Length: 568
Image 1 (spheres, rainbow, N blue to C red):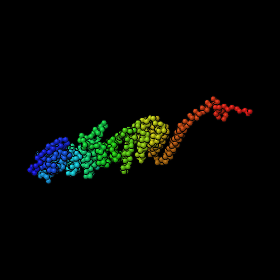
Image 2 (tube, helix red, strand yellow; image 1 turned 180 degrees about the vertical axis):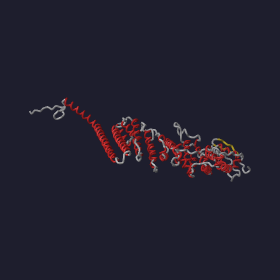
Image 3 (cartoon, one colour; image 1 turned 135 degrees about the vertical axis):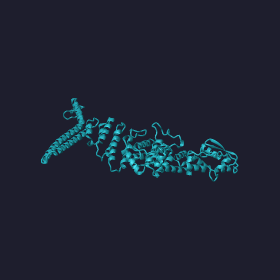
Image 4 (cartoon, helix red, strand yellow; image 1 turned 120 degrees about the vertical axis):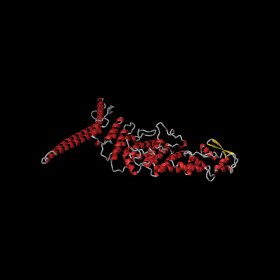
């Protein structure tokens, strides 16, 4: 006190709260205030002290320290106190008992050594003014590094993995082999009875800028991708997902300026999400994709989710892929364009030699086509495009066209206003030769199908019947040959071959007759319209003759009778 003799009190106004403090006590602890008091001994300094970057609560703790009281450090106030102490010059060079050294000692020994205390400190440092000063002091980096190191030792601190139901067994084996599953040692089990259900704070409580920084550090340190993916989904669930009636503005956090923007958050999650196959179920990936579309995230974000879904499309279900169309001008119930892009990503990233995944995806495409076919707003071109993609998917696989036929039947039933030509165009994607006998029987009696398609189905049914009879005859002949003696085998085979030939000739005659009947039907359909027009024209000519308007000799008009001209 003897070093300073300012005696006069000074007033501080922090966020509207006034503080009247002794100049000598403040100068003894703060080098910045001491210099300011020396330069302006008699002036009112309230206008120079109004921009101190702090809150009234933190400034009160600083003032109590200047008056000789002990400061109660907590995880929530340690970083703001350290920043303000540095700003006011409360360092060892000015006073042996300085606030900055005490705060940093507490931070080093009590904060960064604990997972929970580190998270609490980061949450309290979200003020932009405090954050900038804390970054200069290295407090943020120290806290982030401490959290990352603890996550490396115990990944369960990040959160439990979200298991993929389609890959449970496969994931358990591969993770155990690769060491991606954290298993506590015996010593930890002795002191923690329920180590899986600890009360540790979650990373998802942090602001996006800290959360993204920590996750990037974990990725660089090779923390298990399954734990990181699970944490990212939980973060999206907390900061992005909302109720259907809730808007983005209503979801803003009570923390004010530190609240996360949903659009920025979902874009950051997509950037951080690993690309490994099967980390998250397709249902969760499709959920995040849907929110990215609703929030109008950038194209790279939506494409990233589509690529990840495409890589594990064989693990998805139809309900996962029924993503509603977005926007005010949506014309279709479901976003079929998104499904087509996902399907392309699947084939562009498919490198396996096993075709079982191709068969699963082919079934999935047919099921999806059958679901969207019931949409009355689904355009004809969109349906045909999806059906063509389904045919392309099944191109290299031996499978029937029953799924596509079912989808076509549903579409024609829901769109009864289609013309005959439009129905024929839609049915053009159906390969009748790949229909099963049961589907052929149903199609032959289906009134919604065009006549031409029904004729094709009948023809295919006859061919299938012929092949079935041939196989039965051959099988019966083979069974009889095994019971006869060796000498009579050749004779019996000749007889059977003759019977088969006779049967084939009889069936071929029936097929030829059926083809002739089909040809006659087609010609009759084509000539129907011409006959009607000719009959109408003949009736009209007959009426003209009866009325005397047409000459029966030269067939010329005689509406105006010509007068005879006599020579004079």
